Length: 435
Image (cartoon, rainbow, N blue to C red; front, side, top):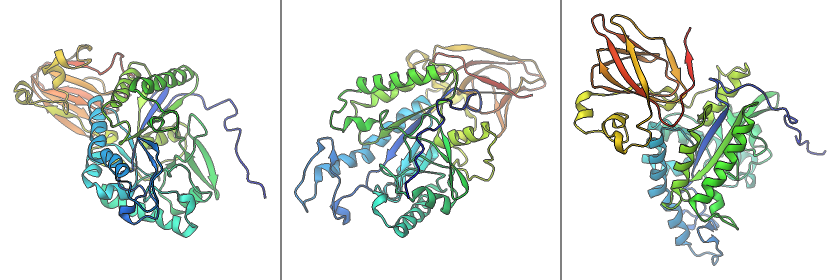
């Protein structure tokens, strides 16, 4: 019986409208965390990885490739932390395509990723070719991965992505297992799409191999950060133009051992800064992409599990930096007070938008922005009322309001409040107002 393939898709007419919240282009930064789970003789594997900085380097059978092992180790020892620094500095979330075994071998990485609010998507039990497994073995490895992530990260993943490609049964086994909101085992589109698996509707969020730093390691490799940035920029420009009439998704694939090198990391930071300069651009995890896509199309996501623990970017509370801490100089790139304390040396610190003014005993409208906001309390006392609770403030305090957080300024009965506010990047944010 011939296999049925879908070569039509949306047939040139992708869904119209925007992402939930009004954004037109969603950018999904994907960090592949595989270090320690690659094939190697040290862990008793029958063969070992061949692709390295030297290309596909042939090695004598049965001899450990210590150079290869050390190149992968660079990703977990150095590269992942360099990437995390960029994500934190630029205040953008990422999805980590993580191998369960890799995070077991680096529990501090697992904790740091979760604490920073990034998404963990299952990249399998190991970085292995699942199409070489039997059905029972693949089913067992899916269960091993879920159990492992639950131990190391405190919650199960809601997304799945195989190494290179799935088996013909992978998607069926994921639906059979349950608890998965999406998989990314496709390169077939620029937006999500649904498939039916054994009568169950299942979401696919396509990935991309071209906007991916693996191109540094392939046969005709990129050689400079500028080349990678240029390719990302050209891809972005095309998708942004098209997103004027229909939503688009751009996936950027990253590897700790590749983009994490000092001569390449600038491409990532430069691209984030470039993309943030456009209206309607939304940096999102793939879980956020999945929920936005489904909710905007009135598809039920209420029963889908969440991969967003308290404190994640999707659920992050307002951060207050006290006047004492801000004026003492005890601030760094982990806080937003440095925008005001060290304004001369911080990129975009000069793009202050204006001032909020609230009369005694009154409050501002309840709003939320699609980018984060930094506020400095110039005058007055009161609370910043959010959907996660109240945050008290007084003159000199600095407040960081995460993207998407509903908030309003409530002044004390006898206090007039003034706040200076600013946003990162060169554009005004999209703002929703609560009725």
